[in-house]
Image (cartoon, rainbow, N blue to C red):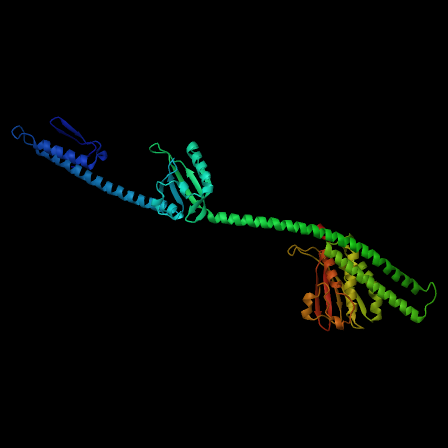
Length: 475
């Protein structure tokens, strides 16, 4: 039978040995207790002793056996506790000594009481070189006041403190962030627990950002100044254009107007030679006036976005107006003009009439210019429905096709560039300065449309452009 040690009590000649709390007794105390029981039993006089009944002897043996088991259990608990302590110490070593940050315990007198390997590595010294040394020894002199002020506040208020300062390692200074707290003191002596994090890379990045911001501000200032100068230059150009247009248009209007009056023969007949001269003057004047108008429009669009005079109109009216201007030249060249406009194309569009007339005039006059005598020019207009998938509204698609000389494939990418001409200057056969297509593209894009070209060299060209039915401001 095994007795419960929590309830076992031994009696010998009035002495009591209470074993009610064996878990709190040390191994040495239990051994002492067992020795004392043996000695007391051995000291009894044999003549006064009575024979110990077998039951009592068995009870004593059982108690000794219980104590033996109890001691074995306590030894096992001790070994387990020692193992846990060793594991805890290993974890402490991993978490504290091998931490990627520096840990320091600092006294109220600002002395380093303890430091981990991270702190020693951070400052490139042995750990023993930190203990009992003031932390200010490793702080850049210019930043020591920052550390002293925060340490004082920490011990006075108990509130956590955070500061950024530079530490010194050998001949190098680097930035760290220090997070300091005052844990509850066990022995009544307050200590500062400081965590040091290397923030040198972050500080260097911040410095680079500040330098870039400063450079950006300087560049922005330069850009603003340049923009101011550009706006002044644009105003000067606009004023110049207005003046030059007036000064040149006035004599051109006189030349064209008086030539037309002479051709009416209201002031007398002209002989054949005189009439030819006047017709040549009129044609040259109109051509120069048209070229001047293109130059002025191009320069104005280069200076700023064009001012659009939006109105509802029919494309057929614009096409008819453009054809009437070019019809005489086409007739002289025996060119056939074909207008192919489907019924749906009679819808109203929202556009700038004068600018669309200029687009048609440029494209149709180019078709006439580059067509062979007896050729054919076709103007087709189609209504196209937009779709939500493409994000396009309904639009008109216009094609101006000719059976002229065409464009080489390698020349197509530069056809809409300003002042580009497909002929060599010394062997040039066709008049023009290379602005008509560029201007047409800009005016079409101002309406929210697009233009493209398809051509086969030696067989002709097709210029296809689109004009949305709605003013692009309504989208």
